[in-house]
Image (cartoon, rainbow, N blue to C red; front, side, top):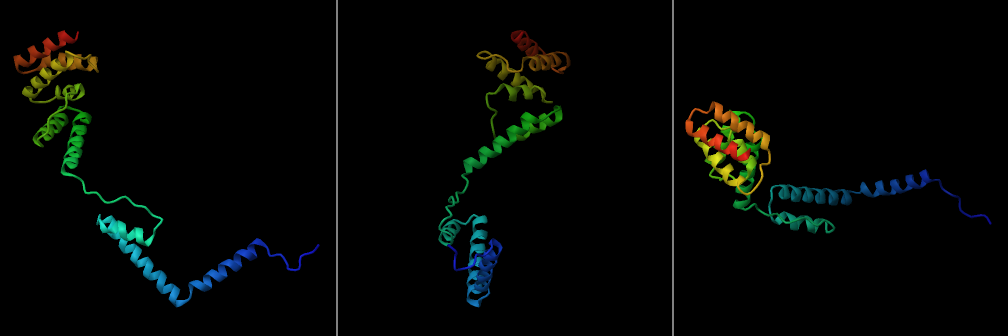
Length: 183
């Protein structure tokens, strides 16, 4: 049984499809319609990136299959929380007495309070101001009543350094007392 029509190769089929598509594209009314739709879509995208609330509805009308999240303005509490986290992260990653002191002062001048965290107060032991150091020793004493030291060797080393090199006798005494408690 032989077929009456001749078989076309795949490349011939593809060529015929693209030729008919291109012929449709070049018609003036199609080109104008596509240009207008493209311009409208670009304008909606620009509005979306400028965080305009009406932009989501516009894009969803243009492309119904797209489901975008609504634009939500950040609450002032969320902004403050992010700023606090950033400043706290700077305190924990700072190295060296000057960098640690500057990061701590920036955090405190922003109006934030330090969390009850051993790591934060361990960093504060490197502060240049001995009043801040004594405050950190007091906080560490309070925290270590109910929990084990997380970085005991570092804590002991910093306390020894304070015992030997602190300018004020009160700081040396507090460091020695905490070091004896830690063991």
